[in-house]
Image (tube, rainbow, N blue to C red; front, side):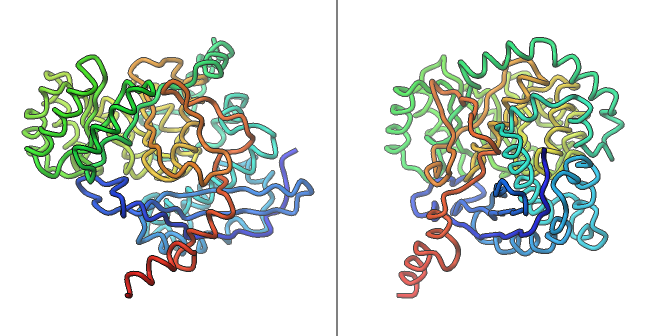
Length: 443
């Protein structure tokens, strides 16, 4: 029985100094410190379980997200978990439609990141109380219960509740077999860890060769700062991985629309499967223009890691502006909003290839994509999930990768719980790591 009154909500600013080694660097974000606003929810339930939720950030600004989480906390405190999940749509809308906080959203930016952290913690707690990993909690849900978690406001012109129900009903056919397949083989992944923009050519070569030996066949390269540099780096990687392996490129919003098309015409010789985030994540029609221009070259457009909400995703789908949809477990309003996007992607027949380049994102998004395959898409065609080999050691239930595939988590919850010693050591600014770094900077 799911329940327990929420008695406490705490939040921590946890930062890892990844910028020191160039990890996570791209054309737009040159010095990221992978960070998280980390939420812990406690209840008075006798089981003593806690819910853990994160939202991913790049260092500075995490303190702003922490403030937003605290501002939302009154919606959660003293509420019964059972009441929340029985009307999850209503609770989701309560968070996203706060009469005053909504003004600095709505359903985007800092407030939405904060909403994701809170909801991620609630989903983690729900799954733990049910004794299931989150993906299994979702797979086992009745379609009507799943739909009751989704806010369909603003998207009924693209997906109605009736259509969502029909998709889930059809998805139930063969579900058991697909679940068994996932448990045995896992979900196919690609690596971004070899080719951050701040890495030297020597490091690129070393990491690509190591990844090949480990069985990786799909590689993503950061591009967008300098064309000649991009051509050289893409050639280095293509020469190492060979013509048969899959290559993707990611500009992280660096270009204007005409510039994106011109730049990709020069990179087309390397046969990239997609160009990711070629321009502003809010420019739906710009993405459509780029998609149309690159289609004859066999290059798709991928975007979504900074897509603000289900409404922008709806427009991207309606405008045929992307060929690969990249959900994010923290940018959108947690599982609730991601469910609506997964269902829209199924209706529009666009493959979902989640974003997971950040601390904890691999741990979270693996649940969503495994559920998507088992219960919604039923297909692995053109579907791969991002993987980065950073910071998993700080999580109590880290991802398991075998043969370049995500193996379904077996532990109950959303895999969001961090190790206490890691939180204590990396909490900003008082953690041991940051005390040393700040002292060094002052000296």
